[in-house]
Image (cartoon, rainbow, N blue to C red; front, side):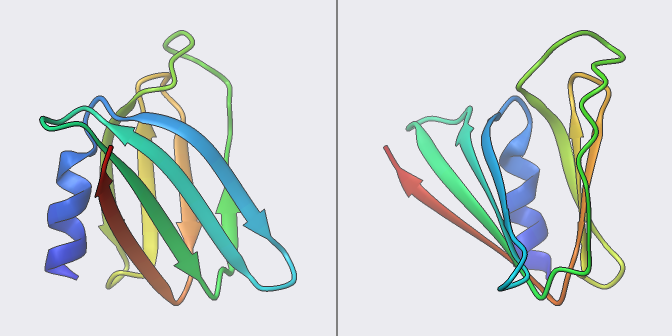
Length: 102
């Protein structure tokens, strides 16, 4: 869990490109472009999904960028705080983060 949170700590100013949820397999996937040097992309996979909350109200104005990300509930809840003021919440059995250079 500490390793996953360390990876999430690099999400500030990352651009959230896509969010997908496969109902049948209970799997969600987020693709992000990290704001790091050297440039990198990241895929977050949540398996055994039990809840997804993805509001897009843009209370702070439109933005595709992440403010911060937290792993809660003993690693079973991922919260992505967007710079738009929206909080994306994913609950599941396993949260994995994989970064790759671009």
